[in-house]
Image (cartoon, rainbow, N blue to C red; front, side, top):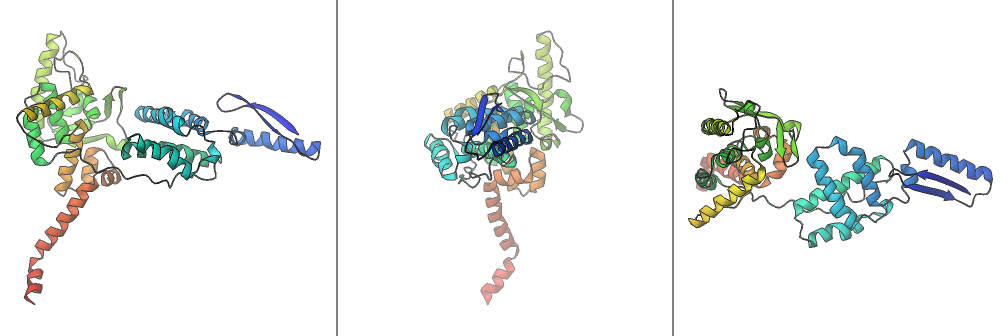
Amino acid sequence: MYRHLYYDLLGKRRERKQSGFKSLQEAQRELILLKASMLENHQLQADKHDMNISQWIDVWYKTYCNDWAISTKVARKNTIEKHVKRLIGDIKLKDITKTIYINRFLNVLKKEGFKSNSISSMHSTISTALNAAVEDDILDRNRIRSAPIEKPERLTNFLTPQELNMFLRYAKKERHSDYTLIILLAYTGMRSGEALGMYWSDIDFDDETVYIKRTRDELGTRKAKTSNSIRTIKVDELVFKQLKKYRAWCIQRKLEYGEQLSDDDYIFLNNDGSMNYYKELLSIAIRRIYRHMKKDKVKINTITGHGLRHTHATILLSQGIPVKTVADRLGNTPETLLETYAHSFDELEEKAVSVFSESLSFVADSVAEN
């Protein structure tokens, strides 16, 4: 027999042993092969027989997390610690099957009330980790890849043009920072984090364009989400008039605090001008707008701050603006746009059939005459 002591990838002391060899030479030969395999594959071959999903996903996260955006790191860490380890972490990596995965993970999440979008995101994290195990020859294949994942729910977080007009009418009654941010999001489709990450130097008042290159949220300020997110977009004159008014207000508020407004300052200040605007203030403003509408018995679809981005996109798409143009404006890829706004394309298809039929009405008349 042979007995080999080593430390695994998590720094834990482990032992591999095997008996039943016919000779000392045969045992020595197998031990040499084991050590060579461990050196070549960074111990993964040696560990794979005992490694469970919790252990592997920790190795995977530690190995690759430095290449991810901080928001991705936080989201994946949350998925791993709160759900993966809780539901399937004890299963041996080599023993995971599609049936086990469906019963112990997907079905449980559904029973716990998670929406299809959230489940799809969690599944993506696990599947990516298992794909890495396949690439490292720990698994022969990813057995959960074909697990049935429900399609994301139909998008409802947007307003029609008529609803947006009503929403902005009430938003205009809000305070300077709230209204300026809302109208900027509605007319550009940018993410709220992108707007909060903008400096005054990112606005070209002469050319009426804005430059988006970073994002800001509770995790701090960082580079924009993807390379597609770094972009320059044209903005309506109405928005620039409001931005000029808002800049004058910011200058005044800064002076009251004994400061001067700089081009390197964030654009948005909170409503008393004492500090930088934060995302929760937008949510509070939107809830307040809906309360005012309810008081006046005005009813429109309820949206979140991100719904202003969806509204911008759906309005452009409904007007037949090319997918590539809308994707560039939003900082998305055409593929992402097609997936996210499927409902708009269904409506456009119906509209296309109607428009085409109307344009060839003389053919229909000819057929009717015959």
